[in-house]
Length: 339
Image (cartoon, rainbow, N blue to C red; front, side):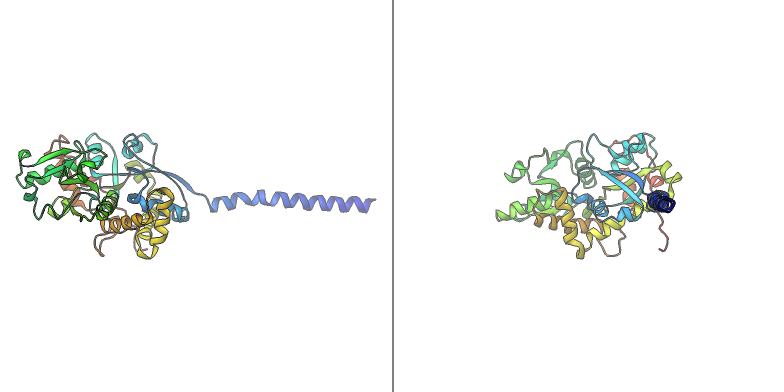
């Protein structure tokens, strides 16, 4: 009887030990895989213009950096800069004009990387019907603009530089409907070269029409588009977190735009935008690659200080801001070292 009780106690002790060990070892395992939670607010929707972030999440590049990143879509009522100020986001995407306007109001937002080296906002037109070799060729054209939008700001900068008066060209108010362009009521229509561009081009190609693009950068106007932003407090108090996040994000961009990863990148886009044909996504990626890294020597994420300074000057000249903000002081590129 005593022997049976002794054996029972030994079995019970071993069983309890088995139950306790995982509990005792769990904290150590959890610490080694602990992830910092981050909210990344996009400028707009989840499309090809944010493929780098989507890819970094889908292929666990963020996770490998010890980050749990929640990517949130942006929009008119979900301004990334504003959410940084309110503490609703840790990082975000914003165009230069958003950053400059915010800095003009005293916002502590800073720029840690510039995604697009060439602004995707361009004008599509039919080259068989009009010729645009110089800015002066805009005279007499009907040009679509979103009044109050960046395309109007860019166009007016071009026109001012070429001494083209408003009476020399007709500005046509743009809506979301491309019908006026399809019906030839407008010679030039503003599009995001890497997003709507391939879709409209394919539509016109099916009708036997060719398309071309008027790129303001080709004529000296470099108005900066999407960049990665955060708060100056975050940069000062959490430099390691900022560095890990940005390094992982830019790695996502490098991998997603690498030609050998085209199929993987398209698969990510198909998940978030299943309504767009795969062939269009492939074209969008090709165009995006050229906008993010226009030449082989460009480092993805590089900040073009001269372009930022020009953007500020354009906004100042057009009285979109009342006084200079010294925007270059808000540009804080991250040094990853030699590793």
